[in-house]
Image 1 (cartoon, rainbow, N blue to C red):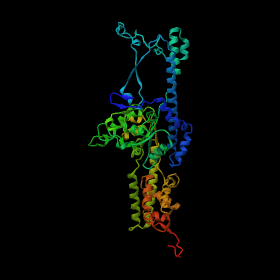
Image 2: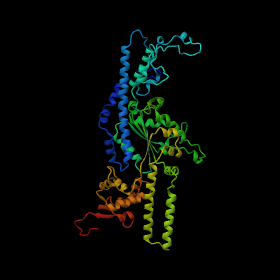
Image 3: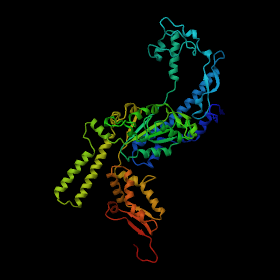
Image 4: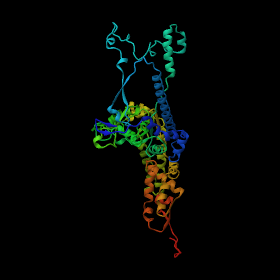
Length: 532
Protein backbone atom coordinates (compact mmCIF):
# COMPACT_ATOMS: atom_id res chain seq x y z
CA UNK A 1 0.00 0.00 0.00
CA UNK A 2 1.04 3.64 -0.41
CA UNK A 3 1.20 6.07 2.48
CA UNK A 4 -0.18 9.48 1.54
CA UNK A 5 1.80 11.24 4.27
CA UNK A 6 5.32 10.21 3.23
CA UNK A 7 4.60 8.96 -0.32
CA UNK A 8 6.29 5.63 0.33
CA UNK A 9 5.20 2.12 -0.58
CA UNK A 10 4.80 -0.41 2.24
CA UNK A 11 4.35 -4.15 2.05
CA UNK A 12 1.59 -5.48 4.29
CA UNK A 13 2.49 -8.69 6.11
CA UNK A 14 0.28 -10.70 8.39
CA UNK A 15 1.86 -10.94 11.85
CA UNK A 16 0.54 -14.46 12.42
CA UNK A 17 2.09 -15.70 9.20
CA UNK A 18 5.39 -13.99 10.02
CA UNK A 19 5.58 -15.45 13.52
CA UNK A 20 4.67 -18.95 12.36
CA UNK A 21 7.32 -18.77 9.63
CA UNK A 22 10.05 -17.58 11.98
CA UNK A 23 9.29 -20.09 14.72
CA UNK A 24 9.43 -23.28 12.65
CA UNK A 25 13.12 -23.96 13.25
CA UNK A 26 12.90 -22.68 16.82
CA UNK A 27 10.13 -25.11 17.79
CA UNK A 28 12.15 -27.96 16.35
CA UNK A 29 15.23 -26.89 18.34
CA UNK A 30 13.34 -26.32 21.59
CA UNK A 31 12.34 -29.98 21.82
CA UNK A 32 16.02 -31.01 21.75
CA UNK A 33 17.39 -28.58 24.35
CA UNK A 34 17.76 -29.59 27.99
CA UNK A 35 19.91 -28.20 30.83
CA UNK A 36 22.24 -31.20 30.66
CA UNK A 37 22.73 -30.81 26.92
CA UNK A 38 23.52 -27.11 27.31
CA UNK A 39 26.00 -27.95 30.09
CA UNK A 40 27.67 -30.61 27.95
CA UNK A 41 28.03 -28.18 25.06
CA UNK A 42 29.63 -25.56 27.31
CA UNK A 43 32.08 -28.19 28.60
CA UNK A 44 33.48 -28.57 25.09
CA UNK A 45 34.74 -24.99 25.01
CA UNK A 46 35.00 -23.77 28.63
CA UNK A 47 37.04 -25.44 31.38
CA UNK A 48 35.64 -25.50 34.91
CA UNK A 49 32.96 -23.11 36.19
CA UNK A 50 30.42 -25.92 36.77
CA UNK A 51 28.16 -23.81 38.97
CA UNK A 52 27.96 -20.99 36.44
CA UNK A 53 27.28 -23.50 33.66
CA UNK A 54 24.43 -25.06 35.61
CA UNK A 55 22.88 -21.67 36.31
CA UNK A 56 23.11 -20.63 32.67
CA UNK A 57 21.76 -23.98 31.47
CA UNK A 58 18.77 -23.89 33.83
CA UNK A 59 17.93 -20.26 33.14
CA UNK A 60 18.21 -20.66 29.37
CA UNK A 61 16.03 -23.77 29.52
CA UNK A 62 13.51 -21.82 31.62
CA UNK A 63 13.68 -19.03 29.07
CA UNK A 64 12.73 -21.48 26.33
CA UNK A 65 9.80 -22.77 28.41
CA UNK A 66 8.65 -19.24 29.15
CA UNK A 67 8.65 -18.43 25.44
CA UNK A 68 6.54 -21.47 24.63
CA UNK A 69 4.18 -20.91 27.56
CA UNK A 70 3.61 -17.24 26.79
CA UNK A 71 3.05 -18.06 23.14
CA UNK A 72 0.46 -20.72 23.94
CA UNK A 73 -1.16 -18.43 26.52
CA UNK A 74 -1.47 -15.62 23.99
CA UNK A 75 -2.97 -18.02 21.46
CA UNK A 76 -5.55 -19.29 23.95
CA UNK A 77 -6.49 -15.75 24.97
CA UNK A 78 -6.97 -14.78 21.33
CA UNK A 79 -9.14 -17.83 20.73
CA UNK A 80 -11.21 -17.09 23.83
CA UNK A 81 -11.66 -13.47 22.81
CA UNK A 82 -12.83 -14.46 19.35
CA UNK A 83 -15.26 -17.05 20.72
CA UNK A 84 -16.73 -14.51 23.15
CA UNK A 85 -17.31 -12.10 20.31
CA UNK A 86 -19.02 -14.79 18.25
CA UNK A 87 -21.26 -15.84 21.16
CA UNK A 88 -22.26 -12.31 22.15
CA UNK A 89 -25.87 -11.24 21.57
CA UNK A 90 -26.99 -8.96 18.77
CA UNK A 91 -28.61 -6.48 21.15
CA UNK A 92 -25.26 -5.49 22.66
CA UNK A 93 -23.54 -2.42 21.40
CA UNK A 94 -20.53 -3.45 19.29
CA UNK A 95 -17.50 -1.25 18.75
CA UNK A 96 -17.11 0.30 15.37
CA UNK A 97 -13.92 -0.09 13.38
CA UNK A 98 -12.42 2.93 11.74
CA UNK A 99 -10.86 2.35 8.35
CA UNK A 100 -7.97 4.73 9.07
CA UNK A 101 -4.56 3.53 10.25
CA UNK A 102 -2.46 4.91 13.00
CA UNK A 103 0.83 6.43 11.78
CA UNK A 104 2.73 4.45 14.40
CA UNK A 105 1.60 1.18 12.88
CA UNK A 106 4.18 1.50 10.14
CA UNK A 107 6.90 0.77 12.72
CA UNK A 108 7.84 -2.63 14.01
CA UNK A 109 6.98 -5.43 11.63
CA UNK A 110 5.41 -2.92 9.23
CA UNK A 111 2.05 -4.64 9.52
CA UNK A 112 -0.82 -2.18 9.48
CA UNK A 113 -3.45 -2.83 12.13
CA UNK A 114 -6.77 -0.93 12.19
CA UNK A 115 -7.34 1.28 15.18
CA UNK A 116 -10.44 0.37 17.22
CA UNK A 117 -12.59 3.13 18.60
CA UNK A 118 -15.27 2.35 21.16
CA UNK A 119 -18.75 3.11 19.94
CA UNK A 120 -20.56 5.98 21.54
CA UNK A 121 -23.53 3.68 22.16
CA UNK A 122 -21.55 1.70 24.75
CA UNK A 123 -20.55 4.82 26.70
CA UNK A 124 -22.82 6.14 29.48
CA UNK A 125 -24.73 9.30 28.64
CA UNK A 126 -23.18 12.56 29.71
CA UNK A 127 -26.17 13.41 31.88
CA UNK A 128 -25.63 10.26 33.93
CA UNK A 129 -22.05 11.27 34.66
CA UNK A 130 -23.36 14.33 36.50
CA UNK A 131 -26.04 12.38 38.34
CA UNK A 132 -23.91 11.87 41.40
CA UNK A 133 -24.96 11.01 44.86
CA UNK A 134 -24.98 13.69 47.53
CA UNK A 135 -21.67 12.58 48.96
CA UNK A 136 -20.00 13.19 45.59
CA UNK A 137 -19.18 9.55 44.78
CA UNK A 138 -19.73 7.72 41.55
CA UNK A 139 -20.68 4.45 43.25
CA UNK A 140 -24.22 4.59 41.92
CA UNK A 141 -22.98 4.72 38.34
CA UNK A 142 -23.07 1.25 36.79
CA UNK A 143 -20.36 -0.06 34.55
CA UNK A 144 -21.79 -0.15 31.01
CA UNK A 145 -19.40 -2.88 29.95
CA UNK A 146 -20.67 -5.49 32.44
CA UNK A 147 -24.08 -6.93 33.18
CA UNK A 148 -25.40 -6.94 36.71
CA UNK A 149 -23.01 -6.76 39.60
CA UNK A 150 -19.30 -6.54 38.93
CA UNK A 151 -17.49 -9.80 39.72
CA UNK A 152 -14.52 -7.84 41.03
CA UNK A 153 -16.42 -6.18 43.87
CA UNK A 154 -14.41 -6.05 47.08
CA UNK A 155 -15.24 -8.02 50.20
CA UNK A 156 -14.17 -7.20 53.77
CA UNK A 157 -12.62 -10.68 54.08
CA UNK A 158 -10.62 -13.01 51.82
CA UNK A 159 -12.78 -15.26 49.69
CA UNK A 160 -12.25 -19.01 50.18
CA UNK A 161 -14.37 -22.11 49.76
CA UNK A 162 -15.13 -22.12 53.50
CA UNK A 163 -16.30 -18.50 53.48
CA UNK A 164 -18.35 -19.18 50.38
CA UNK A 165 -20.29 -21.96 52.09
CA UNK A 166 -21.00 -19.77 55.14
CA UNK A 167 -22.57 -16.96 53.11
CA UNK A 168 -26.33 -16.62 53.49
CA UNK A 169 -27.05 -13.89 50.98
CA UNK A 170 -27.48 -15.52 47.55
CA UNK A 171 -26.50 -12.34 45.75
CA UNK A 172 -23.18 -12.00 47.57
CA UNK A 173 -22.61 -15.72 47.24
CA UNK A 174 -22.93 -15.52 43.45
CA UNK A 175 -20.55 -12.56 43.34
CA UNK A 176 -18.01 -14.32 45.55
CA UNK A 177 -18.18 -17.50 43.49
CA UNK A 178 -17.48 -15.52 40.32
CA UNK A 179 -14.46 -13.87 41.93
CA UNK A 180 -13.17 -17.21 43.19
CA UNK A 181 -13.66 -18.77 39.76
CA UNK A 182 -11.80 -15.91 38.07
CA UNK A 183 -8.88 -16.33 40.48
CA UNK A 184 -8.71 -20.06 39.79
CA UNK A 185 -9.09 -19.75 36.03
CA UNK A 186 -6.64 -16.86 35.69
CA UNK A 187 -3.40 -18.29 34.22
CA UNK A 188 -0.09 -17.78 35.97
CA UNK A 189 2.46 -15.42 34.52
CA UNK A 190 6.05 -16.62 34.19
CA UNK A 191 8.54 -13.87 34.95
CA UNK A 192 12.20 -13.82 34.01
CA UNK A 193 15.19 -13.98 36.35
CA UNK A 194 18.12 -11.89 35.16
CA UNK A 195 21.65 -13.06 36.01
CA UNK A 196 24.88 -11.39 37.16
CA UNK A 197 28.13 -13.29 36.53
CA UNK A 198 31.09 -11.86 38.43
CA UNK A 199 34.65 -13.04 38.77
CA UNK A 200 38.27 -12.16 38.14
CA UNK A 201 39.51 -11.34 34.67
CA UNK A 202 40.19 -14.31 32.44
CA UNK A 203 37.87 -16.66 34.35
CA UNK A 204 35.60 -17.31 31.36
CA UNK A 205 32.62 -14.96 31.74
CA UNK A 206 32.66 -13.58 28.20
CA UNK A 207 33.63 -16.96 26.74
CA UNK A 208 30.60 -18.57 28.38
CA UNK A 209 28.35 -15.95 26.82
CA UNK A 210 29.91 -16.27 23.37
CA UNK A 211 29.73 -20.07 23.46
CA UNK A 212 26.12 -19.92 24.57
CA UNK A 213 25.32 -17.61 21.65
CA UNK A 214 26.70 -20.13 19.16
CA UNK A 215 24.48 -22.89 20.53
CA UNK A 216 21.16 -21.13 21.04
CA UNK A 217 18.53 -20.71 18.38
CA UNK A 218 17.13 -17.46 19.77
CA UNK A 219 18.45 -13.97 19.00
CA UNK A 220 21.52 -13.24 21.09
CA UNK A 221 23.40 -9.96 21.57
CA UNK A 222 26.70 -9.38 23.39
CA UNK A 223 27.08 -5.71 24.27
CA UNK A 224 30.00 -3.87 25.87
CA UNK A 225 28.77 -1.41 28.49
CA UNK A 226 31.92 0.74 28.47
CA UNK A 227 30.58 2.85 25.60
CA UNK A 228 27.17 3.61 27.15
CA UNK A 229 26.56 7.15 28.41
CA UNK A 230 23.60 9.12 29.68
CA UNK A 231 21.14 10.65 27.28
CA UNK A 232 22.44 13.93 25.90
CA UNK A 233 26.15 13.02 26.01
CA UNK A 234 28.43 11.71 23.30
CA UNK A 235 28.23 7.94 23.24
CA UNK A 236 25.65 5.20 22.89
CA UNK A 237 22.42 5.13 24.86
CA UNK A 238 20.93 2.13 26.62
CA UNK A 239 18.44 1.50 23.81
CA UNK A 240 21.33 0.57 21.53
CA UNK A 241 21.56 -2.77 23.36
CA UNK A 242 18.10 -3.68 22.06
CA UNK A 243 19.10 -2.34 18.65
CA UNK A 244 21.96 -4.85 18.55
CA UNK A 245 19.56 -7.64 19.47
CA UNK A 246 17.06 -6.54 16.83
CA UNK A 247 19.81 -6.42 14.23
CA UNK A 248 20.89 -9.98 15.07
CA UNK A 249 17.25 -11.04 14.74
CA UNK A 250 17.21 -9.67 11.18
CA UNK A 251 14.85 -6.90 12.37
CA UNK A 252 12.16 -9.41 13.28
CA UNK A 253 10.46 -7.85 16.29
CA UNK A 254 8.67 -11.06 17.25
CA UNK A 255 11.97 -12.93 17.59
CA UNK A 256 13.87 -10.05 19.19
CA UNK A 257 11.31 -9.85 22.00
CA UNK A 258 12.25 -13.42 22.98
CA UNK A 259 16.04 -13.03 22.81
CA UNK A 260 18.92 -12.87 25.27
CA UNK A 261 21.15 -9.84 25.90
CA UNK A 262 24.56 -10.12 27.59
CA UNK A 263 25.77 -6.89 29.18
CA UNK A 264 29.55 -7.29 29.33
CA UNK A 265 31.74 -5.13 31.59
CA UNK A 266 28.73 -4.18 33.69
CA UNK A 267 31.00 -3.12 36.57
CA UNK A 268 32.27 -0.22 34.44
CA UNK A 269 28.95 1.63 34.90
CA UNK A 270 29.23 1.65 38.69
CA UNK A 271 28.75 4.97 40.43
CA UNK A 272 31.90 7.05 41.01
CA UNK A 273 30.39 9.39 43.59
CA UNK A 274 32.67 8.15 46.34
CA UNK A 275 35.87 8.81 44.41
CA UNK A 276 35.63 12.64 44.26
CA UNK A 277 35.74 12.98 40.48
CA UNK A 278 35.89 16.54 39.20
CA UNK A 279 34.02 15.75 35.98
CA UNK A 280 30.40 14.66 35.81
CA UNK A 281 29.86 10.91 35.97
CA UNK A 282 28.03 10.40 32.66
CA UNK A 283 28.55 6.64 32.48
CA UNK A 284 27.69 5.58 36.01
CA UNK A 285 24.54 6.02 38.05
CA UNK A 286 22.66 7.73 35.24
CA UNK A 287 23.19 4.75 32.95
CA UNK A 288 21.99 2.38 35.65
CA UNK A 289 18.83 4.41 36.12
CA UNK A 290 18.19 4.42 32.38
CA UNK A 291 18.50 0.62 32.32
CA UNK A 292 15.87 0.03 35.01
CA UNK A 293 12.86 0.08 32.70
CA UNK A 294 14.82 -1.83 30.10
CA UNK A 295 15.60 -4.69 32.48
CA UNK A 296 12.16 -5.00 34.01
CA UNK A 297 10.18 -4.61 30.80
CA UNK A 298 9.27 -1.61 28.69
CA UNK A 299 8.60 -0.55 25.12
CA UNK A 300 11.80 0.63 23.43
CA UNK A 301 11.92 2.62 20.21
CA UNK A 302 14.79 1.32 18.08
CA UNK A 303 15.68 3.27 14.91
CA UNK A 304 15.67 1.45 11.59
CA UNK A 305 19.29 1.52 10.45
CA UNK A 306 18.38 0.00 7.08
CA UNK A 307 16.22 2.92 6.01
CA UNK A 308 17.62 5.88 4.00
CA UNK A 309 18.81 8.93 5.85
CA UNK A 310 15.76 10.97 4.90
CA UNK A 311 13.57 8.34 6.57
CA UNK A 312 15.80 7.83 9.61
CA UNK A 313 12.87 8.83 11.83
CA UNK A 314 11.28 5.37 11.45
CA UNK A 315 11.55 3.17 14.51
CA UNK A 316 10.80 -0.35 15.68
CA UNK A 317 8.81 -0.79 18.88
CA UNK A 318 10.28 -3.65 20.95
CA UNK A 319 8.88 -5.00 24.23
CA UNK A 320 11.66 -6.08 26.62
CA UNK A 321 9.41 -7.94 29.07
CA UNK A 322 10.47 -11.41 27.91
CA UNK A 323 14.10 -10.56 27.05
CA UNK A 324 16.59 -12.29 29.35
CA UNK A 325 19.51 -10.12 30.53
CA UNK A 326 22.85 -11.59 31.64
CA UNK A 327 25.35 -9.13 33.15
CA UNK A 328 29.08 -9.93 33.36
CA UNK A 329 31.78 -8.03 35.21
CA UNK A 330 35.09 -8.49 37.01
CA UNK A 331 34.19 -6.21 39.96
CA UNK A 332 37.80 -5.74 41.03
CA UNK A 333 38.01 -5.02 44.74
CA UNK A 334 34.66 -6.60 45.58
CA UNK A 335 36.42 -9.25 47.67
CA UNK A 336 37.78 -6.53 49.94
CA UNK A 337 34.26 -5.17 50.47
CA UNK A 338 33.05 -8.64 51.41
CA UNK A 339 36.05 -9.09 53.70
CA UNK A 340 35.31 -5.86 55.55
CA UNK A 341 31.70 -6.92 55.92
CA UNK A 342 32.72 -10.23 57.41
CA UNK A 343 35.41 -8.60 59.63
CA UNK A 344 38.19 -10.58 58.03
CA UNK A 345 41.69 -9.53 57.16
CA UNK A 346 41.79 -7.79 53.81
CA UNK A 347 43.70 -9.67 51.16
CA UNK A 348 45.39 -8.27 48.10
CA UNK A 349 48.67 -6.74 47.09
CA UNK A 350 49.41 -5.38 50.57
CA UNK A 351 49.61 -8.85 52.05
CA UNK A 352 51.52 -10.10 49.02
CA UNK A 353 54.00 -7.22 49.17
CA UNK A 354 54.66 -7.70 52.86
CA UNK A 355 55.18 -11.41 52.31
CA UNK A 356 57.64 -10.81 49.49
CA UNK A 357 59.48 -8.16 51.49
CA UNK A 358 59.88 -10.47 54.46
CA UNK A 359 61.00 -13.32 52.22
CA UNK A 360 63.50 -11.07 50.45
CA UNK A 361 64.91 -9.84 53.76
CA UNK A 362 65.37 -13.40 54.98
CA UNK A 363 67.15 -14.38 51.79
CA UNK A 364 69.35 -11.30 51.83
CA UNK A 365 70.34 -11.76 55.45
CA UNK A 366 71.35 -15.35 54.77
CA UNK A 367 73.72 -14.28 52.00
CA UNK A 368 75.12 -10.98 50.91
CA UNK A 369 75.07 -12.09 47.26
CA UNK A 370 71.97 -14.30 46.81
CA UNK A 371 72.50 -17.23 44.48
CA UNK A 372 70.11 -18.95 42.03
CA UNK A 373 68.60 -21.08 44.81
CA UNK A 374 67.46 -17.97 46.64
CA UNK A 375 65.70 -16.67 43.54
CA UNK A 376 64.02 -20.05 43.00
CA UNK A 377 62.76 -20.04 46.58
CA UNK A 378 61.51 -16.48 46.15
CA UNK A 379 59.65 -17.45 42.97
CA UNK A 380 58.09 -20.46 44.70
CA UNK A 381 56.96 -18.30 47.61
CA UNK A 382 55.43 -15.87 45.14
CA UNK A 383 53.54 -18.71 43.42
CA UNK A 384 52.24 -20.12 46.71
CA UNK A 385 51.12 -16.68 47.89
CA UNK A 386 49.36 -16.03 44.57
CA UNK A 387 47.59 -19.38 44.84
CA UNK A 388 46.50 -18.62 48.40
CA UNK A 389 45.33 -15.16 47.36
CA UNK A 390 43.17 -16.58 44.56
CA UNK A 391 41.71 -19.22 46.86
CA UNK A 392 40.83 -16.64 49.50
CA UNK A 393 39.30 -14.33 46.89
CA UNK A 394 37.18 -17.16 45.48
CA UNK A 395 35.97 -18.06 48.95
CA UNK A 396 34.90 -14.48 49.61
CA UNK A 397 33.19 -14.02 46.25
CA UNK A 398 31.08 -17.13 46.86
CA UNK A 399 29.50 -15.25 49.77
CA UNK A 400 28.62 -12.13 47.79
CA UNK A 401 25.36 -10.39 48.61
CA UNK A 402 23.34 -7.63 47.03
CA UNK A 403 24.55 -5.14 49.65
CA UNK A 404 28.14 -5.74 48.55
CA UNK A 405 27.31 -4.72 44.98
CA UNK A 406 25.52 -1.63 46.29
CA UNK A 407 28.62 -0.71 48.30
CA UNK A 408 30.70 -1.23 45.17
CA UNK A 409 28.70 1.44 43.32
CA UNK A 410 25.59 -0.22 41.87
CA UNK A 411 22.27 1.37 42.81
CA UNK A 412 19.78 -0.79 44.75
CA UNK A 413 17.14 -0.61 42.03
CA UNK A 414 19.58 -2.01 39.50
CA UNK A 415 20.79 -4.85 41.72
CA UNK A 416 17.23 -5.77 42.63
CA UNK A 417 16.45 -6.53 39.00
CA UNK A 418 19.08 -9.30 39.00
CA UNK A 419 17.81 -11.94 41.44
CA UNK A 420 20.59 -14.40 40.51
CA UNK A 421 24.15 -13.40 41.48
CA UNK A 422 26.86 -16.00 41.00
CA UNK A 423 30.64 -15.80 41.16
CA UNK A 424 33.11 -17.60 38.90
CA UNK A 425 36.20 -19.05 40.54
CA UNK A 426 39.71 -18.23 39.39
CA UNK A 427 41.71 -20.75 37.37
CA UNK A 428 44.55 -22.66 39.01
CA UNK A 429 47.56 -24.29 37.33
CA UNK A 430 45.77 -27.55 36.53
CA UNK A 431 42.83 -25.74 34.93
CA UNK A 432 45.13 -23.55 32.86
CA UNK A 433 46.85 -26.66 31.50
CA UNK A 434 43.43 -28.01 30.53
CA UNK A 435 42.61 -24.69 28.86
CA UNK A 436 45.72 -25.10 26.72
CA UNK A 437 44.80 -28.55 25.42
CA UNK A 438 41.21 -29.73 26.06
CA UNK A 439 38.70 -27.27 24.53
CA UNK A 440 37.66 -27.48 20.92
CA UNK A 441 39.36 -24.16 20.26
CA UNK A 442 42.36 -24.68 22.55
CA UNK A 443 45.40 -22.42 22.18
CA UNK A 444 47.86 -25.25 21.52
CA UNK A 445 45.61 -26.54 18.73
CA UNK A 446 45.51 -23.07 17.19
CA UNK A 447 49.29 -22.68 17.15
CA UNK A 448 49.74 -26.22 15.86
CA UNK A 449 47.47 -25.32 12.96
CA UNK A 450 49.54 -22.21 12.25
CA UNK A 451 52.72 -24.29 12.09
CA UNK A 452 51.01 -26.97 9.96
CA UNK A 453 50.21 -24.33 7.36
CA UNK A 454 53.98 -23.86 6.93
CA UNK A 455 54.56 -27.63 6.82
CA UNK A 456 55.93 -27.86 10.35
CA UNK A 457 54.82 -29.74 13.47
CA UNK A 458 54.64 -28.13 16.91
CA UNK A 459 55.15 -30.28 19.99
CA UNK A 460 54.83 -29.10 23.59
CA UNK A 461 56.00 -31.35 26.42
CA UNK A 462 53.81 -31.85 29.53
CA UNK A 463 56.38 -30.09 31.71
CA UNK A 464 56.36 -27.15 29.32
CA UNK A 465 52.56 -26.92 29.61
CA UNK A 466 52.82 -26.69 33.39
CA UNK A 467 55.52 -24.03 33.14
CA UNK A 468 53.37 -21.99 30.74
CA UNK A 469 50.45 -22.25 33.17
CA UNK A 470 52.63 -21.06 36.07
CA UNK A 471 53.83 -18.04 34.09
CA UNK A 472 50.27 -17.11 33.14
CA UNK A 473 49.15 -17.55 36.74
CA UNK A 474 51.82 -15.12 37.94
CA UNK A 475 50.47 -12.42 35.59
CA UNK A 476 47.06 -12.34 37.37
CA UNK A 477 45.22 -12.21 34.03
CA UNK A 478 43.66 -15.68 34.08
CA UNK A 479 43.35 -17.60 30.83
CA UNK A 480 44.08 -14.46 28.80
CA UNK A 481 47.69 -14.60 30.00
CA UNK A 482 48.24 -17.92 28.22
CA UNK A 483 48.18 -16.33 24.78
CA UNK A 484 50.62 -13.64 25.87
CA UNK A 485 53.09 -16.27 27.14
CA UNK A 486 52.80 -18.39 23.98
CA UNK A 487 53.25 -15.38 21.72
CA UNK A 488 56.54 -14.54 23.41
CA UNK A 489 57.79 -18.14 23.39
CA UNK A 490 56.90 -18.90 19.77
CA UNK A 491 58.01 -15.61 18.26
CA UNK A 492 61.43 -16.85 17.12
CA UNK A 493 60.19 -20.25 15.81
CA UNK A 494 57.43 -18.56 13.82
CA UNK A 495 60.10 -16.31 12.35
CA UNK A 496 62.50 -19.17 11.46
CA UNK A 497 60.08 -21.84 10.16
CA UNK A 498 58.62 -20.22 7.00
CA UNK A 499 60.80 -21.06 3.98
CA UNK A 500 63.18 -23.31 5.95
CA UNK A 501 63.75 -27.07 6.24
CA UNK A 502 62.52 -27.22 9.85
CA UNK A 503 60.04 -30.09 10.19
CA UNK A 504 59.36 -30.07 13.95
CA UNK A 505 59.54 -27.50 16.74
CA UNK A 506 59.68 -28.89 20.29
CA UNK A 507 58.87 -26.59 23.19
CA UNK A 508 60.42 -27.88 26.42
CA UNK A 509 60.32 -26.68 30.01
CA UNK A 510 63.80 -25.23 29.64
CA UNK A 511 62.66 -23.17 26.66
CA UNK A 512 59.70 -21.83 28.65
CA UNK A 513 61.90 -20.85 31.60
CA UNK A 514 64.50 -19.29 29.29
CA UNK A 515 67.29 -21.80 29.97
CA UNK A 516 67.49 -23.02 26.37
CA UNK A 517 65.99 -22.17 22.97
CA UNK A 518 63.23 -24.30 21.38
CA UNK A 519 64.46 -27.46 19.68
CA UNK A 520 64.43 -27.61 15.87
CA UNK A 521 64.25 -30.88 13.94
CA UNK A 522 65.11 -30.47 10.28
CA UNK A 523 64.32 -32.57 7.24
CA UNK A 524 67.00 -35.19 6.55
CA UNK A 525 68.67 -34.52 3.21
CA UNK A 526 69.65 -37.62 1.15
CA UNK A 527 72.93 -35.91 0.18
CA UNK A 528 73.95 -35.18 3.74
CA UNK A 529 74.68 -37.61 6.55
CA UNK A 530 74.70 -34.93 9.20
CA UNK A 531 71.43 -33.81 10.73
CA UNK A 532 71.56 -30.46 12.41
